[in-house]
Length: 400
Ligand code: CTP
Image 1 (cartoon, rainbow, N blue to C red):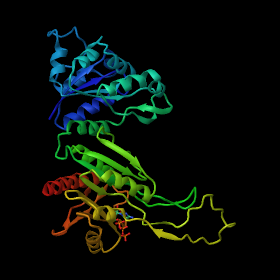
Image 2 (image 1 turned 45 degrees about the vertical axis):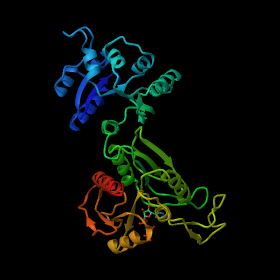
Image 3 (image 1 turned 90 degrees about the vertical axis):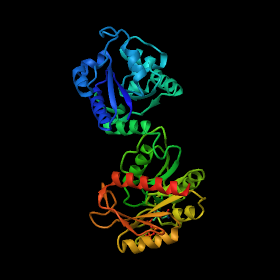
Image 4 (image 1 turned 90 degrees about the horizontal axis):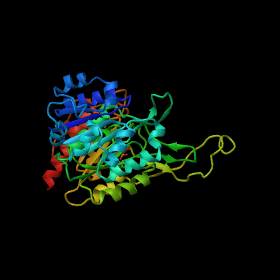
């Protein structure tokens, strides 16, 4: 586990920084805290000293040790500025060292992550954007703020992401040495849409939760992930090791998978891909009753992406597919294992209230050639995802 220094600066979101400290501790990291003077007006240093069991550095002049900031800078393996104001970002970008926080940051050689939180106009200001670009080119990782309601009462970009999202982002930073470090994994998530006319489409009920959970688990295990994503109803993870490609139709998804999988180690097809698309897509909105009383739409089959890509995979590449079934789960999923050419099929039921679509829980059965069906107990999708990434790791290692 790592030595993490959390820098709290003077944003009203400082209280969320306390949650980040706790979240990092829960993951087993040793956390020490530095606060700017403004931050101490928003959160008590005593609280953080009690939580971390370390003194909180707030000034360069109060300590018995005249250079406590150098000891702290050297101790640090990851420095996290959360929440980061426009002011600390400007100081970091320009090498200004005029208080305990900015001086210790300048003295820190460790990797740095900045999680900004500020008013949306301050965020968009050219000076802030210039400073962020400088930090990025200096190798500092920036976690983008969320959009939503700001403390000022209006909406915009600049909100601090939720503490658990920040902890997941930092965990990914710290575990780049995980079992999948150096591996490239392509994951598809969400549902595709096939247009009927400019306003209508054929879609499905996929929430994207499983694909998103798999993405986070793969990042946490150290992999570089390309997430090819259709329609999802959950926020996407953020990570410096994540590339997101948004697609709408099956054909777009196919093209993106083809390209990304060429030099990847693994593909996980968690997307709910449309099997059929309209033969003709109207270029204008089809008008009610004038053009149709009854309306039959001719459909034609789309490409089976999993089947096409899995059959063409290279030695050592691992492909995992899903089987979404409403009945005869195992028999249907076994058929998919045989026909699709995937190394593993994850079978899950999508019927009834406990079906996989949209639920946070999932009960899956793992099918792989040469092994018995392995029925996993029902568990949160996040846990299913972690176990699947473990399984992927084993498959990759056995093929090495
Ligand atoms: N899949 C795909 N391309 C398609 C349809 C499905 O790549 N055109 C992938 C899915 O991402 C999933 C697997 O194939 O990993 C199985 O999808 P599923 O919907 O369960 O099965 P289908 O192949 O569509 O067959 P059916 O609709 O008959 O169950």
